[in-house]
Length: 126
Image 1 (cartoon, rainbow, N blue to C red):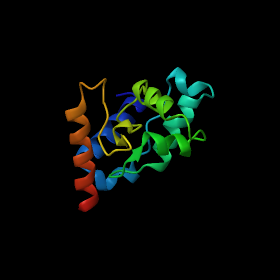
Image 2: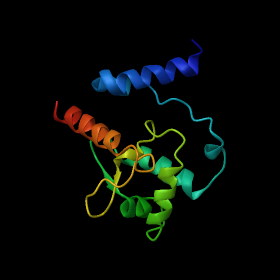
Image 3: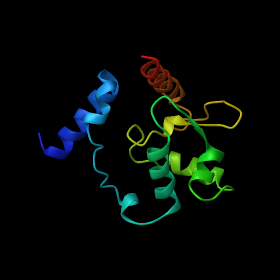
Image 4: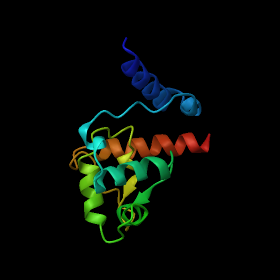
């Protein structure tokens, strides 16, 4: 298996099966064109990745503030919608200010979002 694919497979295996070992595996490299130029979307995604750890959530509004534009909560939603690596950059951790989960995969993946949040909460309680 080629190195980047193996790195990604190892990371995913750790996330789902051995979350206590996540620190052992580096994040897979991001080669998508979105990460090749500066943009608000790139800033939002990397801010989410850096600041919202497993088992925690952040609101769209708070993520907008963390990303440098407190009035851009809707743009944060757009960044989540266009996330090219949605499990690695954990857009499932972004929720609405009223505590509702919002949409995941256009609303079709909300059960997946709830499962991922429950998985991460369980890991934090271990």
